[in-house]
Length: 187
Image (cartoon, rainbow, N blue to C red; front, side, top):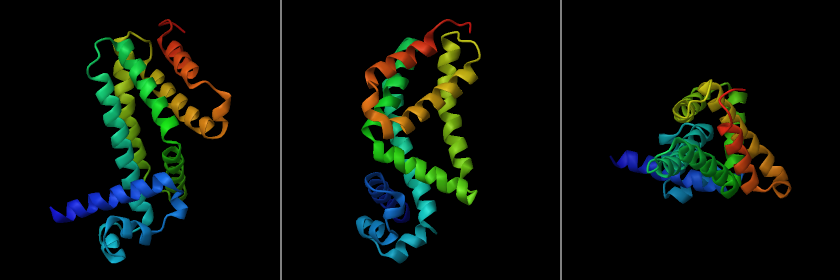
C-alpha cells in the first residue's frame, strides 16, 4: 500500500507542477523534490517523464470527470444534464488554461512517440458514452455523431480560448453550444 501512496503523491506533485508550467520546463528532479522522494525513487515508479505526465494528465481528467458527474447526477431532465456538461466543460477550460496547455503538450508528445493513444481513446470513449446517452435520451438523431461534435466543439473552444480569450463571451458561447445541440431532431 505504501508504494501506491507514494505513486499517488508523485502524480499529484507532477499534476500541480505541469498545471503551473510547461511540461518541457518541469524537471524530474523538481517533481521528486515536491513529492518528497529521491529522483531514483521517482524513476522506480515511472520510467520516464512522459509516462508520469500521462498519469498526471489522467489524474487531472479524473478531477474534471468527477466534477461533471457531480453536476449531472442530481439533475432530472436530459436538457439540464446537457447544459451541466457544457457548463462544466467550458468552465474547466477557462479556469484551467495551463492544464489545457499541458493536455496539448502531452497529447502532442503521444503523437510524436506514437505511444499512449490508447489512453486518449479510452478517456474519449468514456466521455462520449455519457454524451451519447444524453443525446439518445433527448431523442436526437445520430447521438454518436452529436457526442463527437460536442467533444470537438469543446476541444476547439479550448484551443481558441487559449489565444483569443478576449474575443468571446464565454456565457454566450455556452448558450450557443447548448442551442446548437438541443435544436430540432432533424438536420
